Length: 113
Image (cartoon, rainbow, N blue to C red; front, side, top):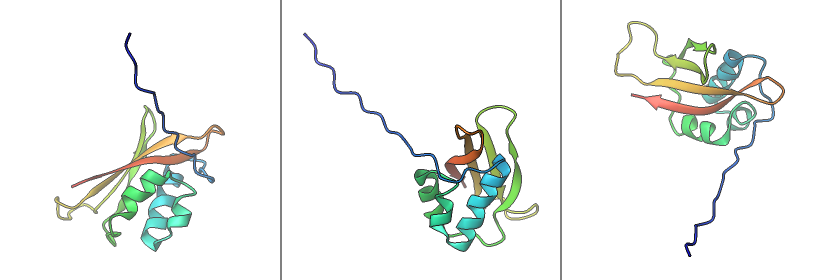
């Protein structure tokens, strides 16, 4: 006979204070990042998303809200430098999800550049 390895699954806890819109959740996370408030960030984003973002120093003035797209899953919100800035600066792409109550939280962060 054959023996299969045990299956494991990882469950990520939903943050305690999801927001009414994707934009509000994303902006709350970035605001907490800007002020160094990791505890606040954990109320609107998963621990892995917070860890990814907080591993990078906040780029003062270079993480401008570029908007959210929620029409098709996954919902994303993007932050980055203002127009005319160095094109090699980082772009921060936040993936958002709905909590069971319909509110939004940041489930993942990807840094490009």
